[in-house]
Amino acid sequence: MTLERIILAIYLLACMFIGLIVSKRALVSDDDYWVGGRRIGISMNALAIMAALASGGSIIGVMGLAYSNGIPFALSLFSGAVIGFPLASILVANPLRNFGKYTITDFLVFRFPHPIIRIGVPVIIVFSFTIYIIAQLKAAGITAESLLGFPYHQGVILFTVVFIIYVSFGGMLAVTWTDMFQGALMVVIVLGTAFYLTLNNDLTVAPLIEATNRSSNLGLLKQQSITSYIGSFVIWAAAISVVPHIVMRIYSSKDSYSAKLSLNVAILLYSVMILSSLLIIVPMGKILFPGLDDADMVFLRVVESSFPPLVRGLAVAAVIAAVMSTTDALLLACSSAVAHDLLGYFLPNLKERVKSRIRVYSTWLIGLLAMAFAFNPPALITIFYSSAIGILCAGLFVPTIAGIWWKQANTTAGICAFLFGIATYIIIQFFPGAPPLSAILIALPASVVGLILGNQFGGRVSDSIIESMSKLHV
Image 1 (tube, rainbow, N blue to C red):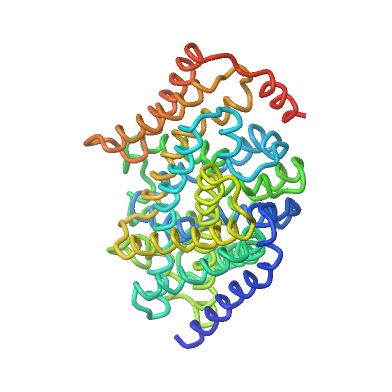
Image 2: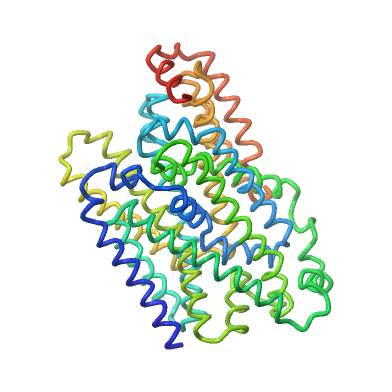
């Protein structure tokens, strides 16, 4: 246990050190803090994007989801993200990078200028991402409890304070540097675990075949409603184009070509890691530990039973890397929603020193709030945070895509698309008996209806917006 704690301590101190080192440059301007000065290269950005998506949910949660609800359900969610990355590179990467701002709210407010968009979008972002952060903190807490012997609450507090420190002071530069190393560590540990389990087992057939022979539910489609399978796919296929922490990565790229290539390289890395998890590690977990009370513990139990302290320490660091690489990006996006989108609207003439303080304070506020809620987390974290991402997709996907590609979409259309999508999603999500993650299948068409109806009643789009939009497609 001592060696694992030493490895983790070194890792956490390194993250904070990076944040403090880059803080002198990051706190100088909005460009440096929010988007890393727009000079992040392809390799670094691809690893950082992969790490931002490959959250604690990807290592802890997705394996737990497959363990409890079957591999097909987890694959439906994962395959949505696989489609989402090339979709984003085609639909949004070039125009948003050419737009050259900081957040998804910046674009939507420019395209559909109205207080409902200016206030509503960042509020939804903060709400959804706080839920997402809570799910990540659960992964950190159960890892600390299982492999380090820390009480759950102490683990949550420790990791929350660490990532708040380096995000609040280092901004996008700190997030990028730490995410690059965290992404590499995740890939090595997950692939290494899968490779070791493949070579070192007593099975006469592949782990996947043996596991499904012993527990047929692991491979059955009927574990969930078909609408849940389709809904989870649609949520993550749509999410990549609009979730703020990925959009901010697009803004941070050197140019639109780098943004596109970074997205596609990221999904290759992500795909290899997730497929290794679902097709090798989860089946071995089902064979070795067939009756886990908390399905999210499957990866941790496999690591604990299969490896010596040194590797367990690196595995702990990898899980925490997955948590922190997503949580830091989420926290930066939440901070931007508060400090840049909301306060920038209400208090546009603040001095740079005051802006810097607000960025730091908002990061601490959101992080500590998520920590408080993480003390009593839900059972399956992937379902939990996917539902939150569904709200974002329901409200932002149609306005964003229409705003980029339909020049005649007016402000009323954008507002109606935003409100119709969110309202429909919330109603269906909380309707008794609604299958998990299925609300998006009705919410997105409702958002399209709102777009079309709103466009009939709204005014004409100004010539200046049409001209500006034409330039974004160059």
